[in-house]
Image 1 (cartoon, rainbow, N blue to C red):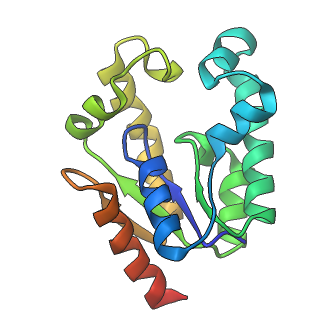
Image 2 (tube, helix red, strand yellow):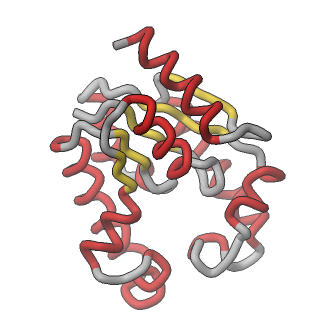
Length: 170
């Protein structure tokens, strides 16, 4: 079972915070988007364009469920992975600490640049991000053991706050 699972929207800092948290906890860090890219031999954007979102979500579900079941690291999940009912249930069933990294659009925009590497944010990116959050926010909040805002904060600061929470619950 993972030490912690980080969830949140694009631009929340999941990958950066996970690296810092891994250093603090002295454990491995796994970014499931990187695992998907390695497994498929394609970038996330290429999978979306060449195979479609449904295929991406299928690969993502398999990877995330496997990592939740077989990994003892800090996991950074892709922003949409929690939309899958099996993934959400696995997070609940395994009682793993799920950390929701919250971010405002004003902070997310410069972080992700709303570019072609974010396939769901290519057309009217700000509106797309807001629409994603309308659907995802209740899911993120419902799964979270702990919520931390990343606005105007360095990944190390956020990771230290999460480590404090984990120390109190583990």
